[in-house]
Length: 230
Image (cartoon, rainbow, N blue to C red):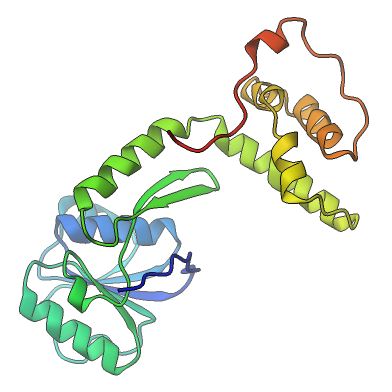
């Protein structure tokens, strides 16, 4: 299979999850994080799902899947260990041109789900194309260790500067951006000295004024520039 990685906007989209156990919990957790409009069909629910349902986070149809249940949904996820149910749901969804995912059942999937790491606005995904969920989990854990709590405010700063420059008709090339995101910028962000970090970043992009003087020991505390995982 040839997978093409994409990020799909699911806010407000109607998504059906068939199955309310541990796997269903994983699916619903991600869908709610994406602000999807979720419905779960299952005779019973995992305790955490039951709590979320009671809090009004999604709709629950307390029974087994029935033919035609996929009607009206934008996306379908099957979270059962029953191959027959997977096949039936996938067949009905595909007949209606609705994308479907069946957990650990690649033949009944139109798309697969990667391991996901979320840090603020940063979302990083890892996948082995369905070949090894264990390796995908290992990659996710390494990414979680790499993306510390300083990355979200750095991402927010970069987004803010990018918006401001675009509004002024200034579009630095990718290499200029890479050179501007220096270790000193990252240290200032880590210290939550966002104003100084912004000024230094703008100077590195060639469009700003000189930033306020840095602490004398800042040069000795610089973080490395962003580099790929080793």
